[in-house]
Length: 433
Ligand SMILES: Cc1ncc(COP(=O)(O)O)c(C=O)c1O
Image (cartoon, rainbow, N blue to C red; front, side):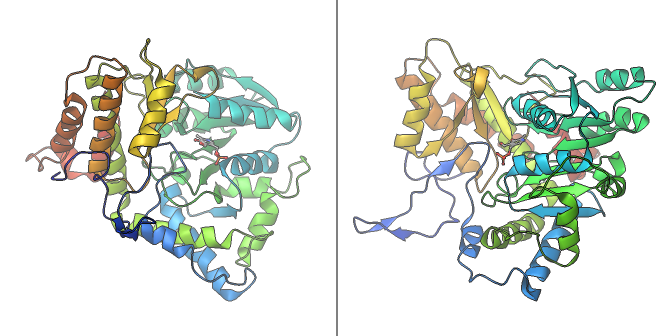
């Protein structure tokens, strides 16, 4: 934590210095604090430069096999994983069209705009979608879901649509708790984990989910362009019976070609090189360390925002590890604040989407970011808000974040199991306000 905080010098040293167009050495890099695509590390970017290989040849088959092998523990599955050349939405669409038929009754459980998108795709393919509503900012209440499913005594609900991490509201659902109600009912359950997979423990097989969708540009910190859809055995069986006509997003074809070490259509080979490097880096850091890193960044950003007098949009016990949603303070032109952060500090944050535009702004924690980047971001936000006329205590945001980092890095307290079990520590840290 020794680097000086200023617009130009807070950078993790993962990017080698480059010759500046104006001469001399240029070490500044732009930092993406948006919730995906994210700041990608130099080794992952470097892998994009590798010469292309034949996507129907043995080297590609080995690449797909290595990627699939590395993905299994992230999904918590020993089952099939389809690799698609698409963004996350393509993965969601592929899962829906491959597993359901027109007229199937689906219970969608959105906690934000991406959950609504899942429902919208299902409707576009003729499914009969019921929405179990949750006020934005909250997580889905496992008891409400279990109650609605219990009420379906005739088992008319064919499918359940869940979101793991809702990027539009900075909310994370408790998938383990939700899985209990789902398991009792038995409907085919699809989970959008596009911005969640890799950020916390997912145990798809144990929790009985049938399809879990992820994408390359979020926690894995690779470029966009690859979606992954993990499927349960019964989902694989179901692929034979879907009556929705599909061609490109057809998981049966994806799995058939996958068995040959191929994809049905020309894949984004370079992005897959980057995905493999990103997965190697993920494995080297260790899953529980990644969870802990993301949870600590999110907790530090929340503490920093609150120290500036800003309120969080997500409710306590619903906070995401990968994106922090902050309410916009009335009287401040946040459009101008975000513009100044981007243009003068090289730090890009996101605004709210759709009806949350102008109401919240969002800060992503994913990608190749250091603690010093988080501290620098909060210092920059503080400086820009001060310039914009908000009265804030100087240094308060950085101090609050630093305190979170120091607290979370304290050595284990004897007898405190929370600190000796990385998995549980990460889950515990995911939630504090
Ligand atoms: C939770 C969630 N679901 C789905 C998507 C859609 O993914 P993509 O933009 O890769 O299509 C996103 C993207 O931000 C997301 O965060």
